[in-house]
Length: 383
Image (tube, rainbow, N blue to C red; front, side, top):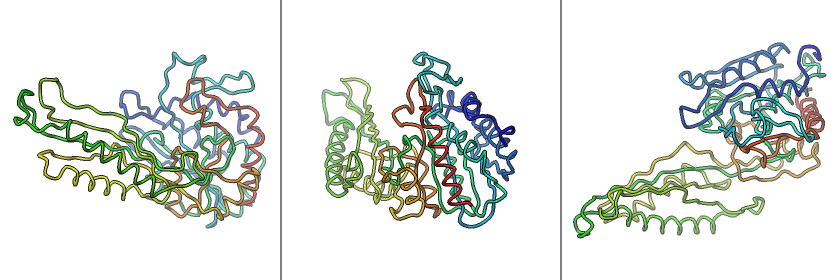
C-alpha cells in the first residue's frame, strides 16, 4: 500500500490543486466532480466499493460513498469537497498549490477541509482492510459551504451499516458534540408608494419595517431568556440584522422594504418551529396595517446539533484526545447524520481561525497525532 498511495503532502496537494469552489453566485460556482473522481480512484485502488451519487446534475455536483467491510455498526469518516470563494490578490501564494513554509502547509482547503481525506488515506496505509469486522465508510460531499445539498442527498438515501461518524471539519483536534444551527430569512413588506407631501396617499413599508424590527428585537430577547446553554462561548441564540433595503427616493412614500436576518439557534430550537413563530409574530404585528408580508428562507437552514455525551463515539474521541467534547458556533453537516441515527462528532486537524481566510493553512505538527487518532478510531470501531 505505501507504493500505491502517495505520501500525505502529495495527497493534500493533489486535492487542493483541483478547484471546487461552491458559491451561491452561479458565475463563481464550480463542479466538484473532479475531486470526487480523484478520491474514488484512490479508495477503489484500496478495495473500497465506490458509489458516486449525483447531487445536482446540471451543476455537475456529486457525493462519494466509499465502503469497505460489512456489518451494522460501522464507522463513517465524512467531509465536504468544496471550498469557499477566494480573493487571489490577498494570498501570498497560489491557493491551488501546496506551499510548505514555517512548519505550515498553505493552500485553499488545507484547513477547511480537503486535507481530511488525505489524513484518512494516511491512517489506513498500514491497516489490513481485509481484516475489518465492521464497515469503514468514507463520505465526501458537495456544496456544504452553500446549500448542504450533498448531506441532504445522503440523508434521503441513508447509509447502510453506519452507526458512528466523525466529520473532519477544522477543530484543532478538539472534539465537538454540539453546535448552533443557522437560519437566514428575508422579510419582505409591500405597501403603496405615493407623493411624500401627503402620507394618506400611500402605505409606508419602511415605517412598517420599523415596527417589525422592534418586534424582532423583543423576540430575540425572549428567545435569549428562554434558551441558554453555558457550554457555548455565546450561551444564547443570536439574531443579526444583516441587510435592509427599502424605497427609491426621499420624496416618495416607501412602497416596499426588505430585511434579511441571520438567526443562530441552540440545540432544542428546531428551525421549522422558529420559522412558524417568526411568521406568526410578524403577521400579528402588521395586523390592521395595509401592508403585505412575505417571509422567504434564503436557504433551507441547518438545525443545531447535539450528540449525547454518553454516545460511544463521544467517549472514544474524548479518551483518544484526552479532551472533553466542546460546543461551537459554526454549523456542519452533522445534524443530517444524527437524524439518520448515526451518532456524530466533529474532529479535524485544521483550525477554524484559518478557514475562509487568505493564506489558509494547516500546521505540520498536527499531521502525526491526528493520523494516529484516526487510525485508533478505525481500529476500535472496525477491527
